[in-house]
Length: 129
Image (cartoon, rainbow, N blue to C red; front, side, top):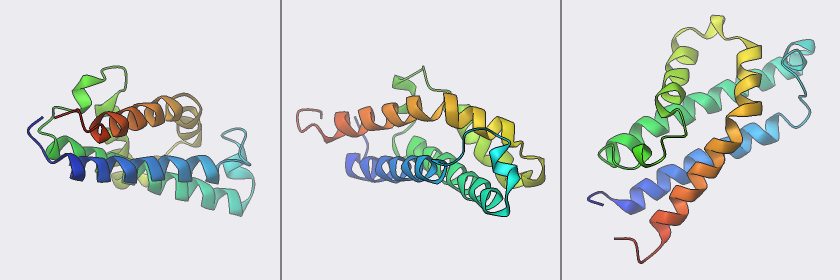
């Protein structure tokens, strides 16, 4: 590994925090339509989208910091789609679909969280040079 592991771990921990925020902010959400039923829940959708922007931007930075070496070691996660979600939300916010966001939360967030934690554990291992 020819990159700054400490910086990579810092970015990974920021992504981990963003995922935990999404999970916390959606505890009372049980379907996509729940996002749209109350103004308070629409705010939760906004907050979740902001965290997805943060995750996507952080992954772009991580990919740069790690010379594209780290993310490619886990091909099971659609890294480019996550980064693309960031771009879509940021540039086409009024086209964001609550159903799509909820599907991502339900199906993609836990595998992403697990991958991020695995990377943190691997990079934190002192035997890993």
